[in-house]
Amino acid sequence: MLLWSKWKTRYGAERLKRRIDWSGPLPQHVAIMMDGNGRWATRRGLPRTAGHVAGMHAMRETIRFCHQAQLRYLTLYAFSTENWKRPKEEVDAIIRLVHEFMTERTLGELNRNQIKVSFIGDTAKFDPDTRRIMEQAVHVTRFNMGMTVNFAVNYGGRSDIVRAVKTMVTEENGSVSIDAFESRLYTSGCPNPELLIRTSGEKRLSGFLLWQSAQAELWFTDEMWPSFNEALFYQALYEYQCRKVRANS
Ligand code: IPE
Ligand code: IPE
Ligand code: MG
Image (cartoon, rainbow, N blue to C red; front, side, top):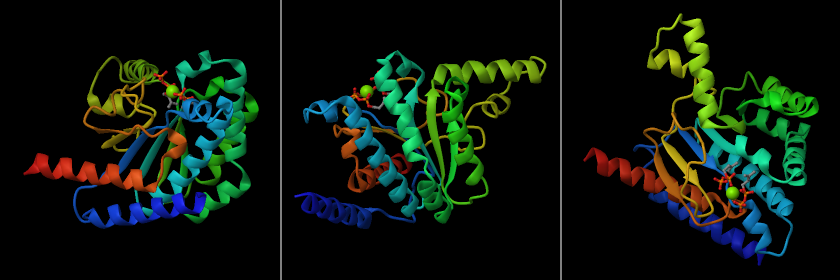
């Protein structure tokens, strides 16, 4: 059964891949709101934390196929400033997954694929062990020249904006410009995302990249995050391309 569904996804992905014009408009930066882990689990009679574990596997696969699709930047909304309000056990389980994900094996794979890791958000709120793991991932992948993966953790778009305004006003002696402001956002140095994906059927921004997604195409799927796959990714790319071609014609 599992093999059959894997084969179907692969076949679907290949078919969609062939429909994309690889010399046509494509996003350099895709941002994803990985939503629906809890519902994926409860619908299967499992605890929500099992959904987060499955979500971590989907995230690993997503990084792989985005790298294969030669994407330049991938930003993944993993934990919002609002998510601290969840039960402590759930928050702890999500943080434990950072430890489980950022192993030597994962870092080795990221390095082999020239993938650079970055964290956007206020990481100071995490415990020292978690911060150390995040810093290490950034450090060991810092010279990689391929895709950059930004993990948005304790990220909130409004805090991002307020923080950038504060530093801009202090450092620029009160002078204000779009460039000076953007260079103080967590995403400084990355182009703004051209495509923003949210899974789970919800159609909210939930504080994600509020400034940066001003011109982004939005793409939604009813699939829960653990069920996200390569075929859905290529479908999003294909629809992005159709919208861009239409807009330019
Ligand atoms: C997204 O899935 C993961 C995080 C927010 C950490 P959810 O945990 O929000 O799952 P649902 O939306 O409740 O199903
Ligand atoms: C958004 O999902 C944040 C992440 C995907 C990490 P949430 O499930 O936390 O957002 P709301 O509460 O539905 O807006
Ligand atoms: Mg949710």
